[in-house]
Image 1: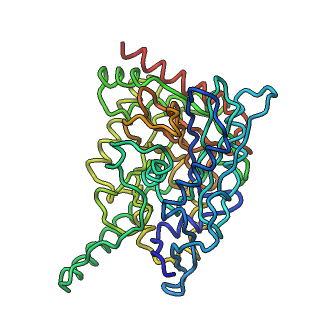
Image 2 (image 1 turned 45 degrees about the vertical axis):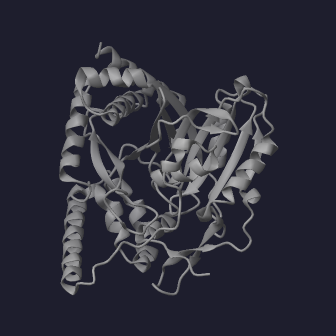
Length: 437
């Protein structure tokens, strides 16, 4: 059965895949049931719902044309239950048993010969809570698309019908006027040249990054929950968006953490790659519809308010220029490169990521609707972004109801203690809040 073609960016994520650089996203979602749950029943319910989502039944199949390309095709042996397992946390003392188990699970690559997703139902949490762990390959979709998949697994809500469900991508309409086609090709070539030039100018000389890490399959996780009311108070006092405040908090946390590790913080700023969805701007057929900004994180500044001002100014400049103007638009350029080029060069280019950025920080959009699974309310949701090759850490945030949930994923060979990083985030948020009263 012929399937829908993967875009150049989708293929790029497949080409970056490796034992030490698995390219799947993740999420740890915690629910609070009113009564004890039956994990086998939850797994069966999730399998039933997964079977109704067409994209979850598909796997990647190589294509003859274009050379090096791939397409999504129906898996003739698809069994949703084979992608779902249950686990009960042990009773031995661990500081955060859910994070420890999720780290062991998230570090294992997905099987590229099967549909590219996995679920775990985890019980044994305090107060009778349970967690749903989601693993989804980045070739499948971006963060916004991953949320659409998750909505299909949760309980139906009247307002959820307005949320886009995952479906096969459709090609953008093309003009039949040959002059319009020529103008489009010339315009895209000009954009590509601008992006490529910006990337070359932004590349930094060796030594590359203070957060560089050795290639390692080991991962560690930590979860942080901040009060959304505190973030709003900072916005009222100093302006900016909620995302600006979160970035400023993370800049302060990285400053604190690096200083505690004996690393210099008074040199150049750290640089974060911040993904930006282009779904409202781009009618392209790729499952991933992304650009990004390269934002300087002012870890060299001691004053938390000044850090926020610097972040706000930088993000305003990026937004004014647009998602196609800077070196951060690497995903856009990758989406326009033929698949066979990705097969040859993407792995090498991925290992040079440190020339451009030190870490990836993403903010995953979530609805304001109250979400449930089998009637149990969703209480916490911690997204996880894959680590770029040789990056020490990746950070993902999501705002849900009255909290900001932050998922920290680190290279286990480079960072042995995530507790100090988690504590640094809390301390940085408190310092900025205190300056806002």
